[in-house]
View 1 (cartoon, rainbow, N blue to C red):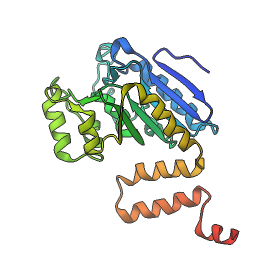
View 2 (view 1 turned 120 degrees about the vertical axis):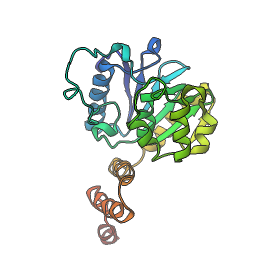
View 3 (view 1 turned 90 degrees about the vertical axis):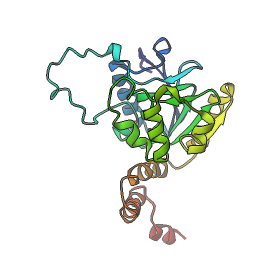
View 4 (view 1 turned 180 degrees about the vertical axis):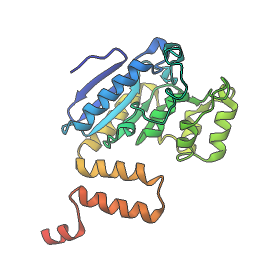
Length: 250
């Protein structure tokens, strides 16, 4: 297994385990972590032995507090045109079109860019001490990706309040569960055991069907019902399953 400076990465049978590992920087991501995550997701994407990923953060206080701005060299490029952000990223499995399911085990605080991992998660579980908030508006930076993605998972009012109120109002794990941002709350000492239990369950499924299901759910968010159904039927065929073939087998 390759070694990384900002991550811990291991494979346990059909399960990949990624740990964001910059505890002294509250597990914030820097350019090096972005590159390393891209390498890890590509590895998982093309490894037929891997069916599911568990993603968590190092320690018990912080999951991910977004981008580490102190580690980005803002003076390296003078032109704003050259540094424009068009959404080409490698932080999450969805950014690199890796359609294997991801279980996000939220072990603590989630801030700002940390929501990329939450909105990309297929199953999100969290500890009782997890909190969620955003500081974009507080520091004078327009939030783009995070509120748009979150509005596909939570009511608009909750998203607006989160981004406008900032750190003054931190969403608890209980509230995140009520709003559908996460699906389960566990005690801190039970988080990884529960995440691995869920992963083991998924690892026993047909990988083609797992991937097609993840892809369909993710892509259908931006489609009308009819277009999503048509795409789902196409993915079903690609996964090797059709009503006709199954009837003929009988």
